[in-house]
Length: 165
Image (spheres, rainbow, N blue to C red):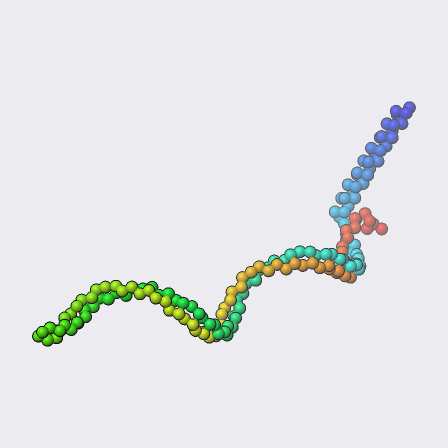
């Protein structure tokens, strides 16, 4: 008798599950044929959150910088050069008969090896364009507290079976 009562209980449980499953199916079908119920929900609360982030952005521009300055230049400038000479020189020659001018050809290269010292003040009055092209990193560490005070309106579906009078 104990085995039969256990079997009866099992059949009852299976039947109840089938009824609930069918009821859920019927409910789901009725939601498809639903109407809408308008609802207004007031929300009043503060939302607090911390923001810790690095923000990078490119910065590219040109700025004009005025320069009004007197600069002293002290420098020794080396000069190394070769000077070619290709000419005829008329040379006077004293002869017993008198002075005779003889053309002497000169075809040579004279080396020049010297230095030049410069000690001078120079006045500079100019506008100079300076290009700037960089990436700027800005760390942001801030706690935000945002008060929310609003009314949210929504349309909630109401199953058809709940609309019956």
